[in-house]
Length: 172
Image (cartoon, rainbow, N blue to C red):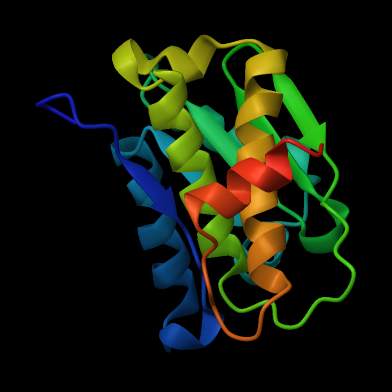
C-alpha cells in the first residue's frame, strides 16, 4: 500500500483452521485495515460469528478500511452478491446456469473477474473504485459473476478464458 499497490483480500474463513477461533477471527479482522478491497462470503461471515445482514457487515468492514480506499464485496452463492464502496451499494443476482457441476473455485473466480474488471476499467488508479457510481459497481459485478458462473458449470475449478467471459457478457 505504501508504494501504491492496491491490496485485496479474499477472506476464505475456515473455522477449523485454528483451535483458537476467537484469536483467528481477530487476526482476520485486523487485516481489514491493511486492505483496500475485501471480498468474503456470507458463509465466511457466519463462520466468524457475524450474524448481521450482509449490508450491515459490509458497512462495518468498510469502516475499517483506509479512508482513501474502500470496496467490500459479500458473495451469497445462488442469491448473488453485494458490492459496497464509499458512495454506492449494489446488489446483483447470481447468473443462472443450466446445471451447476461443481462450486469449487466459484469465489476465487468471482474475485478474479472483479480484479480483472477493476484493471480493465482503470478504477484502480487513485482508488477510483472507492467512489465510483452504482452503475460502475454493477459493471464490475457483471464480469465477476459471469466468471464465477462459467466456472461452476464445469467440474473442478476451471477458470474461464477471457474470451469465454467476454462472450457471456455480451449476452447479458
